Length: 222
Image 1 (tube, rainbow, N blue to C red):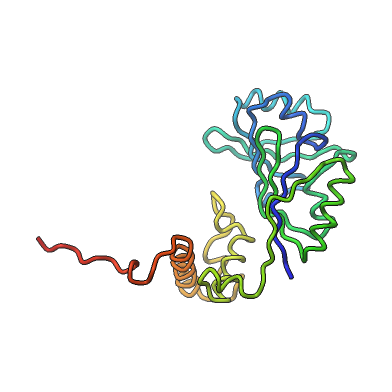
Image 2 (image 1 turned 135 degrees about the vertical axis):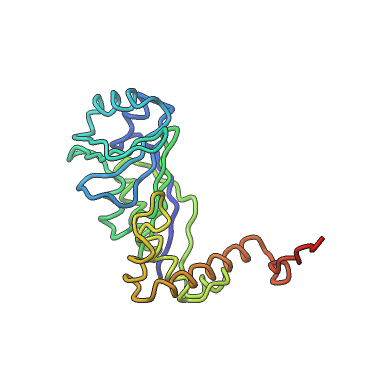
Protein backbone atom coordinates (compact mmCIF):
# COMPACT_ATOMS: atom_id res chain seq x y z
CA UNK A 1 0.00 0.00 0.00
CA UNK A 2 1.54 3.29 -1.12
CA UNK A 3 2.49 5.65 1.70
CA UNK A 4 3.25 9.35 1.91
CA UNK A 5 5.74 10.57 4.49
CA UNK A 6 6.57 14.16 5.39
CA UNK A 7 10.10 14.04 6.74
CA UNK A 8 12.02 16.86 8.39
CA UNK A 9 15.82 16.79 8.35
CA UNK A 10 18.50 19.26 9.32
CA UNK A 11 20.71 20.56 6.54
CA UNK A 12 23.75 19.82 8.72
CA UNK A 13 25.82 17.16 7.00
CA UNK A 14 24.04 17.48 3.65
CA UNK A 15 25.20 19.26 0.53
CA UNK A 16 23.35 22.44 1.48
CA UNK A 17 24.53 23.03 5.05
CA UNK A 18 27.34 25.39 4.00
CA UNK A 19 24.84 27.52 2.07
CA UNK A 20 22.70 28.06 5.18
CA UNK A 21 25.77 28.83 7.26
CA UNK A 22 26.90 31.45 4.76
CA UNK A 23 23.47 33.02 4.21
CA UNK A 24 21.09 32.13 7.09
CA UNK A 25 18.18 33.93 5.40
CA UNK A 26 18.35 31.52 2.46
CA UNK A 27 15.27 29.52 1.46
CA UNK A 28 15.32 26.61 -0.98
CA UNK A 29 12.64 24.87 -2.96
CA UNK A 30 13.14 21.85 -5.18
CA UNK A 31 12.15 22.12 -8.83
CA UNK A 32 10.18 19.01 -9.71
CA UNK A 33 11.49 18.59 -13.24
CA UNK A 34 14.78 19.74 -14.68
CA UNK A 35 16.75 18.26 -17.57
CA UNK A 36 20.01 17.57 -15.79
CA UNK A 37 21.95 15.04 -13.78
CA UNK A 38 21.90 17.42 -10.82
CA UNK A 39 19.16 19.04 -8.76
CA UNK A 40 17.06 22.04 -9.65
CA UNK A 41 16.81 24.31 -6.62
CA UNK A 42 15.04 27.65 -6.36
CA UNK A 43 17.12 29.86 -4.05
CA UNK A 44 15.86 33.08 -2.49
CA UNK A 45 16.16 35.32 0.55
CA UNK A 46 19.48 37.13 0.26
CA UNK A 47 20.72 38.95 -2.85
CA UNK A 48 21.72 36.90 -5.86
CA UNK A 49 25.35 37.94 -5.45
CA UNK A 50 25.33 36.59 -1.87
CA UNK A 51 23.71 33.37 -3.10
CA UNK A 52 26.37 32.87 -5.77
CA UNK A 53 29.19 33.70 -3.36
CA UNK A 54 27.86 30.96 -1.06
CA UNK A 55 27.56 28.50 -3.97
CA UNK A 56 31.12 29.29 -5.03
CA UNK A 57 32.54 28.74 -1.54
CA UNK A 58 30.58 25.58 -0.68
CA UNK A 59 32.97 22.63 -0.84
CA UNK A 60 30.10 20.13 -1.16
CA UNK A 61 28.89 21.68 -4.41
CA UNK A 62 30.68 20.60 -7.55
CA UNK A 63 29.04 22.71 -10.24
CA UNK A 64 26.12 25.08 -10.45
CA UNK A 65 24.38 26.82 -13.34
CA UNK A 66 21.59 29.36 -13.28
CA UNK A 67 18.64 28.04 -15.28
CA UNK A 68 15.93 30.62 -14.70
CA UNK A 69 14.71 33.40 -12.43
CA UNK A 70 11.37 34.52 -11.06
CA UNK A 71 11.10 37.89 -9.30
CA UNK A 72 13.39 37.61 -6.26
CA UNK A 73 14.38 33.96 -6.60
CA UNK A 74 16.72 32.06 -8.90
CA UNK A 75 16.68 28.51 -10.23
CA UNK A 76 20.03 26.75 -10.20
CA UNK A 77 21.05 23.36 -11.50
CA UNK A 78 23.29 22.10 -8.70
CA UNK A 79 25.50 19.03 -8.61
CA UNK A 80 26.94 17.85 -5.32
CA UNK A 81 30.39 16.34 -4.95
CA UNK A 82 30.35 12.49 -5.04
CA UNK A 83 31.10 12.04 -1.32
CA UNK A 84 28.35 14.44 -0.23
CA UNK A 85 25.28 13.20 1.62
CA UNK A 86 22.46 13.79 -0.85
CA UNK A 87 19.02 13.30 0.81
CA UNK A 88 17.26 13.32 -2.56
CA UNK A 89 19.47 10.52 -3.81
CA UNK A 90 18.82 8.49 -0.65
CA UNK A 91 15.08 8.70 -1.35
CA UNK A 92 15.58 7.51 -4.93
CA UNK A 93 17.76 4.62 -3.79
CA UNK A 94 14.84 3.43 -1.63
CA UNK A 95 12.57 3.54 -4.71
CA UNK A 96 10.84 6.61 -3.35
CA UNK A 97 9.68 9.76 -5.10
CA UNK A 98 10.28 13.24 -3.72
CA UNK A 99 6.93 14.98 -4.24
CA UNK A 100 8.15 18.27 -2.81
CA UNK A 101 11.09 19.61 -0.83
CA UNK A 102 11.71 23.00 0.72
CA UNK A 103 14.09 24.39 3.30
CA UNK A 104 14.49 27.44 5.50
CA UNK A 105 16.42 28.15 8.70
CA UNK A 106 18.66 25.21 7.90
CA UNK A 107 15.89 22.61 7.94
CA UNK A 108 14.50 20.62 5.02
CA UNK A 109 10.93 19.32 4.78
CA UNK A 110 10.53 16.51 2.27
CA UNK A 111 7.24 14.99 1.16
CA UNK A 112 8.07 11.49 -0.05
CA UNK A 113 5.98 8.79 -1.71
CA UNK A 114 7.09 5.20 -1.12
CA UNK A 115 5.62 1.78 -1.83
CA UNK A 116 4.71 0.97 1.78
CA UNK A 117 5.39 1.80 5.43
CA UNK A 118 8.29 -0.64 5.55
CA UNK A 119 10.01 1.54 2.94
CA UNK A 120 9.49 4.56 5.20
CA UNK A 121 11.25 2.69 8.01
CA UNK A 122 14.08 1.74 5.68
CA UNK A 123 14.44 5.34 4.48
CA UNK A 124 14.47 6.56 8.08
CA UNK A 125 17.34 4.17 8.83
CA UNK A 126 19.23 5.36 5.75
CA UNK A 127 18.99 8.97 6.90
CA UNK A 128 19.95 8.01 10.44
CA UNK A 129 22.96 5.97 9.26
CA UNK A 130 24.09 9.01 7.24
CA UNK A 131 23.95 11.12 10.44
CA UNK A 132 21.04 13.13 9.02
CA UNK A 133 18.62 12.65 11.91
CA UNK A 134 15.09 12.59 10.48
CA UNK A 135 11.77 13.44 12.08
CA UNK A 136 8.59 11.92 10.66
CA UNK A 137 6.16 14.86 10.67
CA UNK A 138 3.29 13.01 9.03
CA UNK A 139 2.70 9.52 7.64
CA UNK A 140 -0.39 8.18 5.92
CA UNK A 141 -1.36 5.45 3.50
CA UNK A 142 -2.96 6.07 0.14
CA UNK A 143 -5.63 3.45 0.69
CA UNK A 144 -8.08 2.62 -2.05
CA UNK A 145 -10.79 4.60 -0.27
CA UNK A 146 -8.65 7.74 0.12
CA UNK A 147 -10.10 9.39 -2.96
CA UNK A 148 -13.69 8.79 -1.83
CA UNK A 149 -12.96 10.42 1.53
CA UNK A 150 -12.20 13.60 -0.43
CA UNK A 151 -15.33 13.27 -2.53
CA UNK A 152 -13.36 12.22 -5.61
CA UNK A 153 -14.09 9.41 -8.00
CA UNK A 154 -11.27 6.97 -8.75
CA UNK A 155 -10.71 8.56 -12.18
CA UNK A 156 -10.65 12.08 -10.74
CA UNK A 157 -8.13 10.98 -8.12
CA UNK A 158 -5.90 9.28 -10.71
CA UNK A 159 -6.10 12.34 -12.96
CA UNK A 160 -5.05 14.71 -10.17
CA UNK A 161 -2.13 12.46 -9.22
CA UNK A 162 -1.03 12.32 -12.88
CA UNK A 163 -1.32 16.11 -13.12
CA UNK A 164 0.88 16.53 -10.04
CA UNK A 165 3.44 13.96 -11.25
CA UNK A 166 3.73 15.66 -14.66
CA UNK A 167 4.06 19.17 -13.23
CA UNK A 168 0.70 20.52 -14.40
CA UNK A 169 0.26 22.53 -11.19
CA UNK A 170 3.79 23.94 -11.15
CA UNK A 171 4.44 27.64 -11.85
CA UNK A 172 5.13 27.84 -14.72
CA UNK A 173 3.39 24.65 -15.89
CA UNK A 174 5.69 21.87 -17.02
CA UNK A 175 3.06 20.15 -19.14
CA UNK A 176 0.12 21.58 -21.09
CA UNK A 177 -3.44 20.32 -20.75
CA UNK A 178 -3.18 18.93 -24.27
CA UNK A 179 -0.01 17.00 -23.40
CA UNK A 180 -1.57 15.73 -20.18
CA UNK A 181 -4.71 14.61 -22.01
CA UNK A 182 -2.55 12.69 -24.49
CA UNK A 183 -0.66 11.09 -21.60
CA UNK A 184 -3.97 9.97 -20.06
CA UNK A 185 -5.38 8.99 -23.47
CA UNK A 186 -8.50 11.13 -23.10
CA UNK A 187 -9.74 14.18 -24.98
CA UNK A 188 -8.78 17.72 -24.01
CA UNK A 189 -12.43 18.45 -23.18
CA UNK A 190 -12.81 15.30 -21.05
CA UNK A 191 -9.69 16.21 -19.08
CA UNK A 192 -10.89 19.78 -18.53
CA UNK A 193 -14.29 18.60 -17.26
CA UNK A 194 -12.74 15.94 -15.03
CA UNK A 195 -10.36 18.45 -13.45
CA UNK A 196 -13.17 20.96 -12.83
CA UNK A 197 -15.29 18.31 -11.13
CA UNK A 198 -12.28 17.21 -9.07
CA UNK A 199 -11.58 20.82 -7.98
CA UNK A 200 -15.21 21.22 -6.94
CA UNK A 201 -15.16 17.96 -4.98
CA UNK A 202 -11.95 18.89 -3.15
CA UNK A 203 -13.08 22.41 -2.29
CA UNK A 204 -16.48 21.18 -1.13
CA UNK A 205 -14.84 18.48 1.01
CA UNK A 206 -12.06 20.63 2.50
CA UNK A 207 -14.32 23.59 3.28
CA UNK A 208 -17.08 21.30 4.53
CA UNK A 209 -19.58 22.96 2.22
CA UNK A 210 -22.95 21.30 1.60
CA UNK A 211 -24.45 20.93 -1.86
CA UNK A 212 -27.10 23.50 -0.93
CA UNK A 213 -24.40 26.02 -0.06
CA UNK A 214 -22.68 25.58 -3.42
CA UNK A 215 -25.75 26.79 -5.30
CA UNK A 216 -25.20 30.45 -6.22
CA UNK A 217 -27.88 32.86 -4.95
CA UNK A 218 -30.04 34.53 -7.59
CA UNK A 219 -28.70 37.77 -9.02
CA UNK A 220 -30.90 40.75 -8.10
CA UNK A 221 -32.70 42.24 -11.07
CA UNK A 222 -32.98 45.73 -9.56
